[in-house]
Length: 230
Image 1 (cartoon, rainbow, N blue to C red):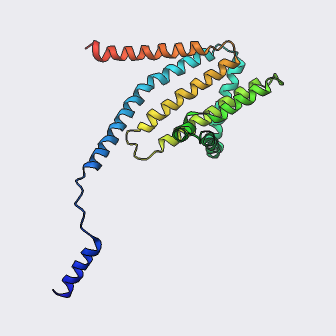
Image 2 (image 1 turned 90 degrees about the vertical axis):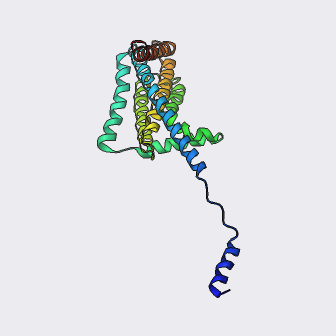
């Protein structure tokens, strides 16, 4: 046995027996599962779009019943945030600090740590808690707090949408369509619940009924057009 052959065999002994080549079945199954989940999320996201419209229409209907000056405070808060975001400064650090607060609050339950920062408008929730305390002592702060509700809600929605849109490997924009639709629905429902506690004219029950009625009407109309009128 020459020296080269001896070295080759010694190297093989040191490395151990060669592993059989992978069949590639597991990667294929994993890729198929991933694509299936992407498709399901895309379908769910599209199905949520009528709900986004319905909950928006229901909120605007109930919100229009309260005093016009209070409505103006809310819209001014949203417009102020948009002006700051578009022309002055992008308060991304403010949003990220809020996300860290939510992560600390839900650190006891790891699955919620990943989704709660997107779903919960933490600054709006904190403002509601502060208002609940201060309203016992100061009666003319309502307009300022409603302004900040609009400001903080717009902040949360803009940067949540921006974060979801920046997700990599999202070729169908499933994370954006499904994720942001869910975020928008939950945020608007929370806001409606908070406003219901502050104003007698705003009915959270009617808000929910209107949202369900409008979304059901959209789905029924779509089903009729697709499957019955053919």
